Structure formats: structure tokens, C-alpha cells
Image 1: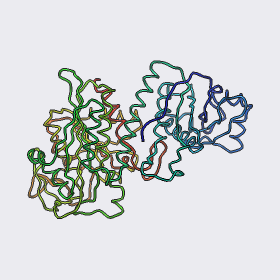
Image 2 (image 1 turned 90 degrees about the horizontal axis):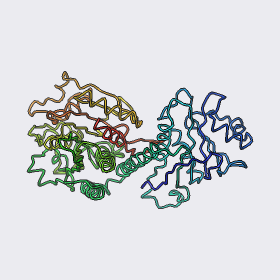
Image 3 (image 1 turned 90 degrees about the vertical axis):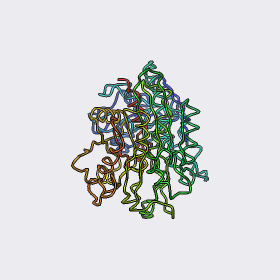
Length: 502
């Protein structure tokens, strides 16, 4: 879905704004309403406060009521959305409340939506406006590419424009442009993850990367199987050996044009479908395995925005693209592969394939001179068990870099939790017959095992590993995060790279 929603700033008084739905935020557990609500309610002869009482509206986060407009205001409808307790309102609360509002507006066929922004809170007006817009745009996302029934596509129920009722300052204009850019990149990542695996395979992902590079002024290099063989990239070749579509290592690069610029690598796991290989997954676990390329999608779509963000560092994005399938040519438990950096890997389980493709992707990033590496991967079910669906695991070898990534996530509302990498657990990835193995015999510390394995391929670079297995794919909608592909990680990467020169 493309972001074809018009966004504008309006300095009109709320009662004078012409729109299909005027959104007012309503706090929970207090008789004191926001000033803007009081002003509009007065124009409507207390009709709004009356409906709150009649409907027993509590103002809880996510609660909405659509009230048909009456005399005194220009809006066709007023949409009341709960924002929770005033003492607990944060930027993330604004994102969630505005997403609830825009979804209610779409269901009611209100295409032009105007948002008021309450004043006098701990969140300043610019930050609140940014979060309201982020939540509204992210919440408007739908993936209907393969729908044919008009009643499911609902062409008449589409958000066409979003207005922010705020002062038109240069800072706010710049903020809106940045929000649009980041949301558009997130939309693209969601679309990629939602594509069926018979539509999106390593070859198609490479074509998309080429098109993105041409459109956005990036350099691109697609390393196919013959060249991978000459580079000694036996790990990614092994994973892709069971598929009729050979793997690719895809590199996009952005140059800052600065002399002696830092070189940052973003490395994404790009398993376009994961059957588990010969260590076959159950059919239930396979159902969502088109999402196993969410790390690569996040990297590709973050790279697509760099020509506009213009960070003061050079950035390469590495997509480790393969399809993990069972066949007579697939790798087997017991096989030994050799990665690009020369290390030998004993295969214990072919379903621990993500770390194998990342091994060559990380080694390639080191070869290209990257001094900072951030990898994103739907790597382990253990991380989902430990942290649930809303939080990603974060591990690394440099505390300062790790903190900057986690802090960037906090700003955009993407949550990470730091897990330790313990040298005492090195035995878990040590092999009897090769340098390392891709899975320990026990089920302990699965997320940390994955990080310990990846650490073998980062050379002397500063490195952060983000295990996004939980938040990359949602089983049900959660405010501004849709069901299925979420685009997690894109906004964190862009926030981090925006501050890369600091």
C-alpha cells in the first residue's frame, strides 16, 4: 500500500475546520477535560459532554465514539478517542489513541480527518503532533493487494487526508516531512513481509532492491551463486541449496560524500520462506514463515530513505536472501559448511538457518570495511518466548552503540530489551568436529546462542544484534501495528542514522 494520504497543517479553530471527522482526545478518570474539548462542546451546546455521560464513555486508551455533527461546528462528525489518564500520557499513548481514531474514521467512511492536539501536557506540542501523525498514518495501513471482493477492499472507506490543527512552524513542517518519510518506508517493509512466498523469492527481492536503488540514487550489487562460490560463502549457499531459486547476497550502499566518514552496515536476514529444511517445521509453524525476511525488509526500506535523511556517514545495507527448502540437494544435519571468513560450521539443525545466511552477510560487511554493524533478524523462537510479541531482543559487543540503538527505539515507540552475551556460554556453539555448530544440544538460552554464533563473524567491528522474531509479525492488530507484517525496525534504524553524526 502506498502512502497516498494528504497531510497538512491547519491553523483554523477546531469548530471551523471542514472535515468528515474532527478528532478530540478525551482523558480517563477525571472530570476535567482538555480545553479544546470544552471549546467545541460549548459550540455544540454541551452535546458532547452529554453523549459521554449517556454512553458511559470512560476515556480509556483505544475507546472511541463517533458523534454526528450539529450546528456550531463545520465538521460533519466529531470523533472522541480515549487517551487514558493524564498523568500517564506519553508520545506512544498519542500514537495508539490516534490510530484508534483513524481506524474508527475509516470504518465510518470519514475520509478527511482533522486532529486536535491537547496542550498543557508533559509532551510538548511538536512531539505530540508528531506522535499523533505517526499513529494516524501507521494505523491507516491496509494490505488488500490480493483481495477481489469490493466489500472487503472497501474503496469508499479510505483515509484521504489528515489535518493537524496546530501552529504552522518551520519545525513542525520539517517534522511532518520526516514522519511521512519514515511511515512510507515502514509501509513498504510491511508490504514486503506480507507478500506471499510464491511472489517474493530471493530473485524477486534482488529485483526490488535494484529498482529501489535506481529510484533513490543508491548503488546496488547483487552477488549471485557463482560469485558467492568464488567468495567462499558456503553458509548462505548451503541454506539455499534445497531451493530451485538460488540465494543472493544483495548490497545497497549510500555515500555521504564526507572524507573519512564512518561506515555503518545494516545486515538483514532475508529468508523469503522457511520450511525448516530437512529439519522440517510443523505445518502450523510454517504458516507465517513468509515473514522470515522481515530483517532484510527493514534494512532495504531504511536504505530507501537515506537519500532524503542524508546522514553524515556511509551506510551499506546487506540483504541475506535465501529460501530454506527440503529437497535432495538440501543440507543435512551433520554437514559441515565453510563461511566467507573461513570458519567451518557443523549443521545440527537445518531450521537454524538464519544465523547461517547472516554469517556470510556479516563477513561481507567486515570485508567492505564497516566499523559498526547492526543486524536485524527473526532469529529465534526463544526470544519470543522470553519477551513476547511486542519487544525485540538486543545484544552486542559495544555498550555505547547498544544504548544508542535502544534509545532510538524509545523515541519512535519500538521496544528493545538488552540480553547478555556471556562468554561462559561459548561451549553452546562449540563443535566437536568444526569451529562452531549452528545449534546447541540443549534448549537453553536460545536467543543468546544465536548471538554467540553471529559474534564469530563480526571481526573487530562494533556490533549490535536485534532479534526481532516477536515484533516483526503480529497475530492480531494492536493500535497502530497491523496484523501480520509490522515493518518493525525501520523507524528505529532511521532514527539512529539521523543522529549518526552526533
